[in-house]
Image (cartoon, rainbow, N blue to C red; front, top):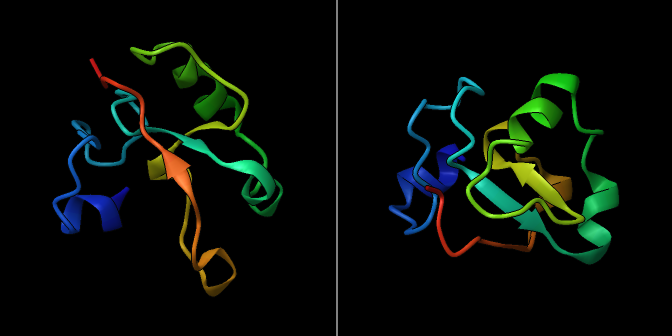
Length: 83
């Protein structure tokens, strides 16, 4: 989430600044990348229920994805709206 905000990426609102309280950084992680991420925490799972667009397989809150070299090239899609 922070990398997207820093790059002025359109589509990641991040209203709460990464505090896991708004669900406006919803992304859908593509294909094999899903297995490279840690499991969804209970808090993230609960917030995914409040995304503006329906939850899909691979839905994650980008504020909970910590970038690393292993995730270089990570592919996600953005929902049509975060609100």
